[in-house]
Length: 503
Image (tube, rainbow, N blue to C red; front, side, top):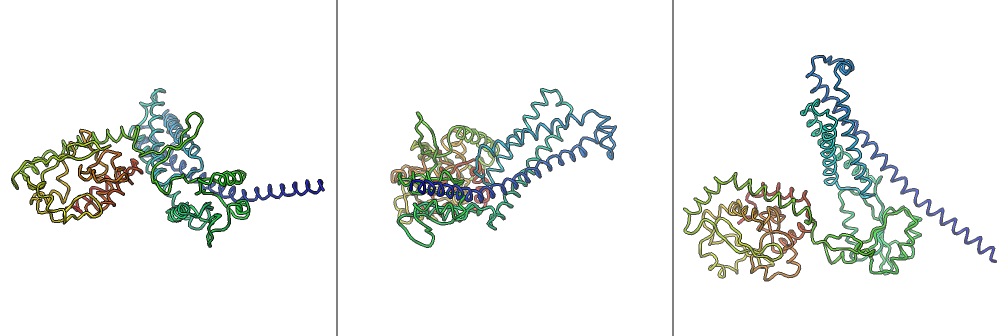
């Protein structure tokens, strides 16, 4: 009996070992196809860089030498001892560029960057490689030989070609994903609210990178629920699974059993944070005294990002104040001649962390506007909150109506930006009366400096209701990036020129 039992145990172990190996083969095959595709694009990219450099040499450098035989570049290389110096620069630049690209790929693990992130990383690698190559050639005392125009042109063309090639790679991946050739097959553990939201998010993903195989859930049934958590191993063996999402982190014993089951399979394991369904924010993982913990980060706008954003605000605001000073004079004169009262209007607003400051604008209302406010509350055009706006506000002057339509009344806020009370981009600066009615959720928008423009400005301005304002402000705070900053800045220009949603 013991011999038979041992034989059966050995047979089951062999069957399980074989099942694990077979389940891994599909993942290995998929990863191999991705690597081949990456290598092909990598080879194509650097071949184009080398060809570009040779063409620049032929068009820009060769004509500068008297001994050039444009039909015989080999003879030119023998006669003029400069060709090898250019090849040295090219070799160094491509080597450094390739090293940075490969390091970025290795350190990102299996995570695939989005197109914008990938393009920014490629541009950064090109800039660093160019500057480092210039520095090395300076130490080697060969810099004086090079044509500055040629090298700068090559760097710019590398940037452009890199952008086009990365876009082509993403497009090819997208087309293959649409055909199901490169898609990751996803199994979701937990068919609750978080699991359902995850499915909707993954299926709406533009790159179509994921295909949902189904759910595992111990308490729910349905066409998409393909089993219970105890059937996980059977599903992994019989279905081709690349990624397992666990959306029931509070079930610790179940999670522990699931993890022990998954570890031996070649699949990615992703656990949705405990409070994901109640909190849309940023998480950072750290270790303190060998104890791992998850820190809730209010906004990515911290550390060096705060410094860079502040330097950008100072540079742009000071430059604009100088350039548009004649416009300031003209608008101020018009305001003064159009109605009685001061040119500028100062009002207390609430800034970062609830600190009040004095915001300055061109006066666009009568001097008794604040006194008349109470009589107009019933006509408030902003629904669902304490903010106040009127589409046909009788307090607005003739010049003020035009200034407001094109946001020219807000130009003096550049002084607030220069002082550090505001930023060029951020949430709308609220009044103290509004803040007094805020809920804890509304206070999230006070985590950063208020701005002259923001997501609310380019998404409808005054046509939005109060809650939509708040949601856009919090979205900006939690998803802040330099790319988002530039996107808002560029979108602000046509919105202001059209005067959309302003009154």
